[in-house]
Image (tube, rainbow, N blue to C red; front, side):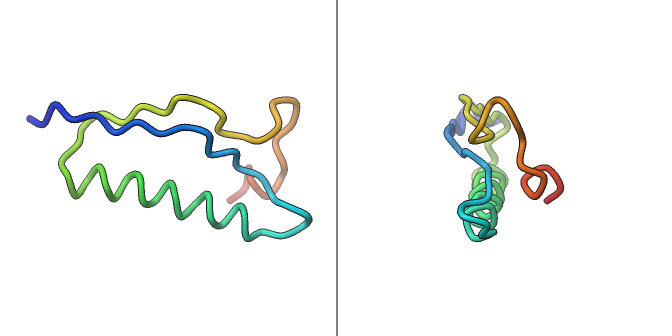
Length: 65
């Protein structure tokens, strides 16, 4: 068993200026995080916060992708 931990934060998922490029970049980062954990046999991932950009609302595209 691997005792390594992967920690990341501040993803801030949202669209930017009606563009999906920021949202697509966030999804790529999430894929990278999970691929890195799998490739390095890391069993524990800690997300330290700021998943969405605006705590008062979730942009519809960010919620549905």
